[in-house]
Length: 90
Image 1 (cartoon, rainbow, N blue to C red):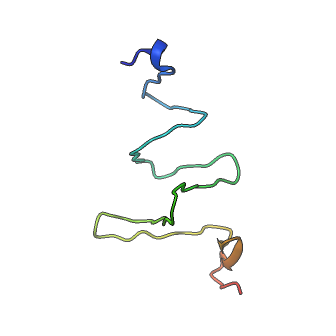
Image 2: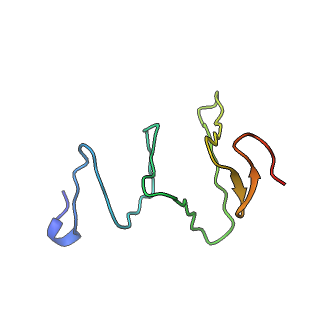
């Protein structure tokens, strides 16, 4: 167990947890099937010095990973490209 007086805050990983402030994880696995963002609009910010890519992958080898846009539109650089009804925006 870390020395709380030296290393700051300590949390037990038991039951529901609520964290605030910046946290850094170098290897994170989430087993939940639903991860709600409850503060309105959210951004997944990939902070890499060069060009990067966000991939949705089902890596078990026998299934696929679908992206289901349940409402709203698909946008690129703020421009609507695909509506929720499946129509291409031009």
